Image 1 (tube, rainbow, N blue to C red):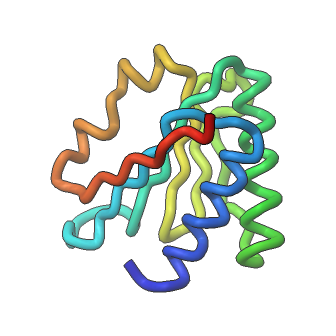
Image 2: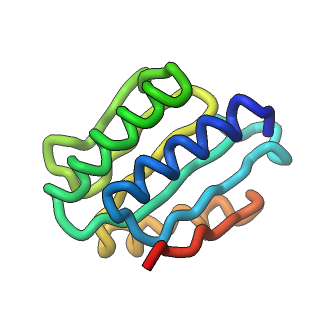
Length: 120
């Protein structure tokens, strides 16, 4: 991954941790030429309201830390799976049961998967 992408991921991770997002995973696609982006950042929230707070926090940390805004944010209406498109990085914020159902980590098993320990 290029340095700017790594820095963006760091700001996204900080935004997630600020609002107590759980089970953060970074899927690095730099070894997959046909991938749609360079990385996914995936995490779990415990309610639709929590996912909305996580979305706001990620937006704030990415804007203040990296000077970027998402090109698109989808899923806020139902807030069960929110996707935030930062171009090189796509952030996926899930409710636990929805994350388990879609299992993006397994779907992209060719990626380099890094699990970030929960803060507590």
